Structure formats: structure tokens, C-alpha cells
Length: 318
Image 1 (cartoon, one colour):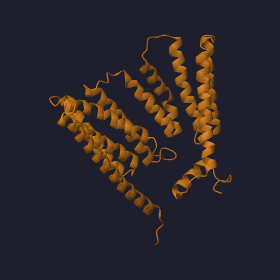
Image 2: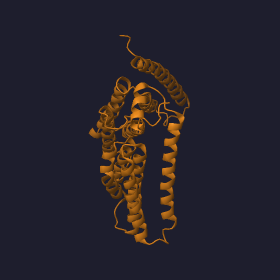
Image 3: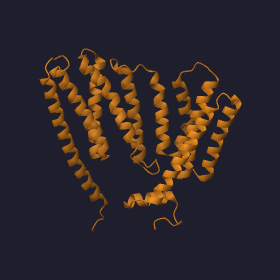
Image 4: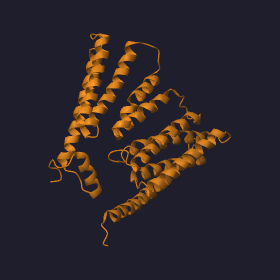
């Protein structure tokens, strides 16, 4: 038995992660049930307020939500924010702050845009996010902050807003990697990058695709969009393969590059302007060949990364 009351769960998690052991199913089931229960409670609070919106007084709505935030924060402090239960309670408090702001915006029609409420949400929970040192809190802060830029005109014909959004995603990804490298997060984990990486590649792919389809190579921002996409794919390849050793990240970068090559091929062959189906069949065959090559390459990289991982886990014979 790994856990018999002699170690707290933080020490257990660190030790098992360093030794390479898998956790017991009961350990994970305990955490999963706690997260599901917290999600059901938060959903119940939201639905209760929404269903009884007309019957409830505005002071009851705002006062009740404020009381729930205070209760969640106090309970998190009592359980300890370094533990899993305390972090779940603090995450619930962060979510309740968002519900409170939504209710406040409905009661007092100030004319504020939705992004202003998201900005207030991000600012109000920033201190809790820093203190918690949790990936879930940090990702919630990033999502709430990124919603602040939804007021931008995200038209693919104008790369500027897309590149600004890509810069924010890039900064969030860099902050995640630096935090993991310096053991800021407890414990360091890779799953938040699996949310940010596809989003980052998407926001640099869209303006690039617009430039290729429109042949808009006569503008400076078009070349900046092309360079940003190429840089994102190249950096993803180098970092994911040789530093992070993340196969999912490599897969996302590979499919982004394949999508760009497909766009160039479609534009070169002029599939949509041709009356013959031969060009479409040709493009389809080339895409199948590229997908086959990508899958084969990913399989070889997977074997390479697995071998490197086993080599680092083996004890020295000296």
C-alpha cells in the first residue's frame, strides 16, 4: 500500500510521479467523484438562480451568491489550498464569482459589454489563481481573460486581431511551460497545453488560410501572418520533440502543416475554378499520401520518445 495515512496526498503524488508508478484506481475515483460532485453543485446553483429568477429578490440573488463565495473560500482555507479538496473548493469559488457577475449584469443593466464582465472576472480571481498554484485555476483565468478580446473584429481578411489573439495564447503557453519547469505548479502537468496548443495553431492558421486563398501577398500584415504561422509550427516542432517530448503537440503541429500544404495545393491546382473532377481526385490522392506519411512519421517519433523515456527512468548501474 502506497497510502496508509503516513504521507499526505501531495507528498504521495510527488513520490509516485518521480518513481513512475501508477496511482490506485481508488485514489483516482476519489478525485473524480469529488470533481463531479462539485460540478453538479455548481450547476445546481446556476440552474436554481436561473429557474427562480423572477421569484427571487435581487438582494437574495446577489447576497446568496456572495455568501456561497465566502463559504467556498473559507472552506478552502480550512482544508488547505495546497490539497486537492481545497483547490476544488477554491475553483468553485472562482466559478461562483463568474455567476455573481452574470447575475449582477442582468439585474443592473449598465450597458457594459460581455467582455468587460469577463475582464472583471479575471481580475477578481487573479489572486486566488496565483495562490492556488493549480493548473485548473490558471486555465480558468486564461479562458476568462481571452474572452475579453472577443469584441475584436475576428475577420480572417484582417490578420491583426487574429495575431493579437495568437500572441495572448503564446504568452499563456510560455507561462505554463515556465511554471512547470520551475515547479510553480503542484505538481507539474502537461494537460493544459493540450488545450492551448490547438487553439494557438488555429488562430494563426485562419489568417494564413485567408492570405493563401485570396492571393493577398501585396500587404505587410499578410506576410506577417504567413511568418507567424510558419514560426508557430516550427517552434512547436522543435520544442515538442526535443524539449517537451509531447506527441500530442507534435500531432497538432503536423496537422497544421498538412493543412497549410493542402491549401497551397488547392490554390495552385485551382480546384474550385475548374470544371473537371480530375484535379479534385489528384488533390485527394496527394492529401491521402501526406496523411499516410504524417502517421508513419508520428509512429516513429512515438517509438523514439518511448525509448528515451524508458532510458531516463532506468537506474544507473554505477
